Image (cartoon, rainbow, N blue to C red):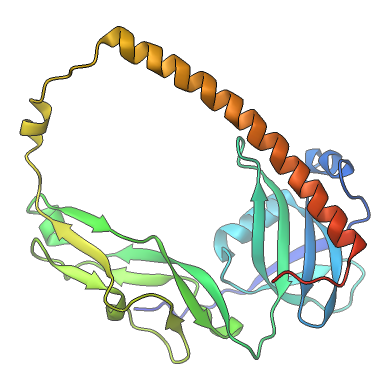
Length: 250
């Protein structure tokens, strides 16, 4: 089943003159650096309000068209959220890529799966609903991209029942780029939990505590390295786009 609802989303933006480390100050002021590029347009560096972008992204994801209105420009631009850069520790969005697609040519996008209904085998017989994918890559014209793929699991009445990729109903012109025979959902019988719990625990408590402390130290050191590299990559990327405004992202 494919949802037919089409979202009408709008987002405001303004031109951005600063690049590099100066963007960090703007982020602290609630602005996210962004770039716009795409079909027959020059690259344009932008700022978007972090709160407004968060609301739009929550609804649109990376597969729904947005009307982007740049301050000072008469007409809006129809875009997709093409890429995001996030802080590896805080999860804050550091940079956004907006892509204006050619509306006459098909594009690919990851579309999330939404589960509806209840499996009686899972609810009443103690089985476990196994989900093998959270999203699927879809190919379609930009205007035809589905916002989500709805899968009804109420037909899974017995252990071993399955839902395949081929069972998803699609509108004309929409294609899922995955083997039709792949299993998306299945219900499996419950395992012997008591037997698993009866297995002896061989590790000593002091050994577990030592391992935990070692892992914690390694994690903090690795996070610091990742954050430094991410900021450097972001600044380098923005500098390249500023120097080569006509370059498009493949």
